[in-house]
Length: 237
Image 1 (cartoon, rainbow, N blue to C red):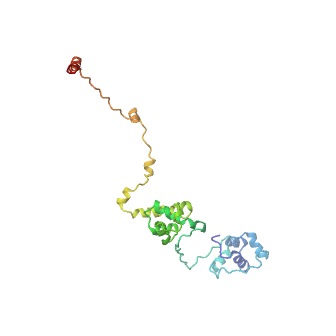
Image 2 (cartoon, one colour; image 1 turned 120 degrees about the horizontal axis):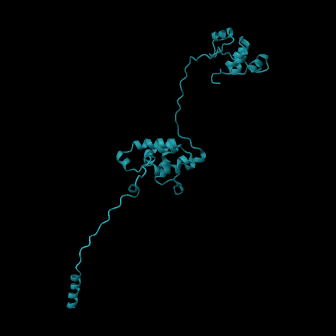
Image 3 (cartoon, rainbow, N blue to C red; image 1 turned 60 degrees about the horizontal axis):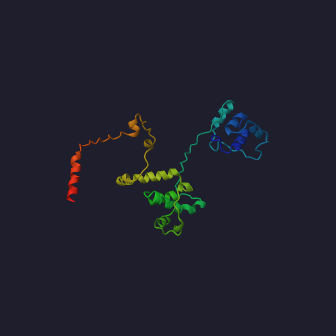
């Protein structure tokens, strides 16, 4: 229906009344069934519809109609519009939050402040759709409901999407100092965690190499000298 003319039935009424085109040609151009076009010609269909001139509206040319009238197998084609309409630019406004989720926005703000301290205030406000006053109140624990606030993931709450959250986090991480980013714990890349490990091939690879046992050499002990010293002690006593 994207190639159909405006007001197809009204256009078909006009073509039936003012041209000698076949029912099939009119049906193909107006995206209607041939029996429906036949019903229009018989007055059984669209009896109260006024015909719409496609030439006046710039959808057809007289040359195109004359060409189709001379060849019953020719299909009509819509005329290209000479007026170029500019594309409508959508201005991105504040994020809409459903009424059932608006009470959870402070919980989402608290979660972002705890888990992503690198995010700027403007990014948090853009993700959650909150105000600067509410953000400051949650951060400084001066919110009227601060005693009952619990950090909750905004993605789980349905306030923002995971794609938007990842985009803002990656955007904020690029602005962080390199020294701070090095000391921050991050997840290991998937290439490292999913890399196949080498299978052990020998007993040493599994249990490791055992340390060589120290062989203590026994010194020759003179028995007479040992007991002779004991006898000397007893004589002194």
